[in-house]
Amino acid sequence: MKKIFTSVLLVLVMVISVVAAGCSSKESSSQKDSKETSPAKESVKVGMVTDSGTIDDKSFNQGTWEGILKYKNEKKTIEEKYLQPSGEQHTDYVNAVNDLVDSGYKIIVTPGFKFETAINEAASNHKDTTFILIDGMTHKGDFKFVKHDNVVSVFFKENESAFLAGVAAALSTNTGKLGFIGGMEIPPVQRFGWGYQAGVKYANEKFGTKAEIVDYLYQGSFNDTAAGQTLAAGMYNKGVDIIFHAAGSVGIGVFNEAKQRAEKGQKVYVIGVDVDQFETGKISSGKSVTLTSAMKRIDVAAYDYIDAKLKGKFPGGEIITLSLAENGVGLPENNPNLSEDTIKKIAEVKKEILEKKITVPSTKEELAAFKK
Image (cartoon, rainbow, N blue to C red; front, side):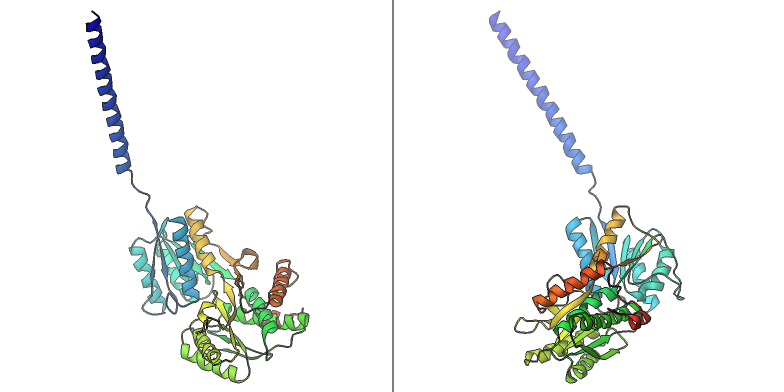
């Protein structure tokens, strides 16, 4: 009886083991099937259409694109692509936008005022697509704002960053002669110029500098690099030692002229625009002719409003203006060509702007009335 009992017990143990193994196998198989059939989260397609120039223009296009790439690298939730239009007319921009929409891009970022009428049209035709229009607002060609719930228009207080650049220039010049070269005479470029003039004036009155903007002009485009170099050469020949450019690829010509002179030992500088252009100004010694840069954080704008859309907080239909207070404009964090004393004084001026002790002029009339 003892042998029989032992045999039965062994059989029962074996049966239980087989059943348990079978259940475990089925459970594992079920879990595996579940993992295999569960669809991966699909990336959102984010597209960009470039304005005048290329994606590596060291300026507006590149800054916008870097904001998109930063979002992709940090969040891992988007798939990105940019298109360079065949031209710079309304239809060229519309066609590029349509190509992205047809390819499934749900968020489209466009940098520059030239997109205003194109995005106005595209927003009406593609209501399921979200548009981030940087430095422009939607209208039909009459400059009367047209509201679209799928578009946010982002502007900047360029005059505030340019004001700080003007202070930096006045504190840094050795000849007392400064220059300004704008691209097209449009509001954002004008605000850069007005802020720059006000910053120089403020430094003269507050810090006792004696700087003067002796040459102030607009080239008329954003892509004539050769013209930019010619204009810069004329200014440097007059004794100007610092030129602030707000001119896109025209400004690359300014850099080219400054670098050629710096290679020969001449001490001249350029103030960059839109993005930190320190690298653009580097010469063979490793030094840079970039004094500082009046930045518009276009990368921040692209990044933040992509994020807002994906988090369900997109401010569709709104016109938003970013200032020093929102870190939307300003000078670079690192400015190797500025002295410690200059950096300290710029920080003081920035604090006064943030505390509203200084109202930086944003129009020609405000500039004329501006006092320290």
